[in-house]
Image (cartoon, rainbow, N blue to C red; front, side, top):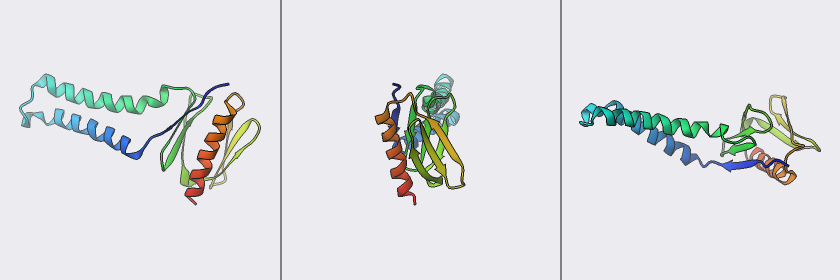
Amino acid sequence: MKKIRIYHIPPFVEKIVLTISFLLVAIGSFSENFGISEFLENTFIVGGFVILLAYQSRVWWFKNYVEWNTKQIFLKLGNNKGLKLRFNTLNSCILQKDTLLIKLKNGETISIAIKEYNRKEVQELQLLLMENIIDKL
């Protein structure tokens, strides 16, 4: 059985990472006003972009990965491509024997094969989806 990693990312974490990386790039870009050496300027700029790149690359670190916050969920299960869904576009979530069906408000249905995953974790995922779908109604 494959394990699904489910992570809740609080909204302030993303804001902190973006703010720190923006500040580093801004300080490095406008450092002639601060009297910083050229090496330190370049270090600040590269450091800001590296922090941003490391944070955004987290979706490639794991194979079976679910990340969610109050507005959306990112699913990367079974294939190399991830699926990002906003909770206010979801209509329902149905757990069947071998598939998890997610129905969108526009009538589209997304089917995710769950046969090889731990059933308890799939049920946690469905509960997470249903709670957020109900909250956004």
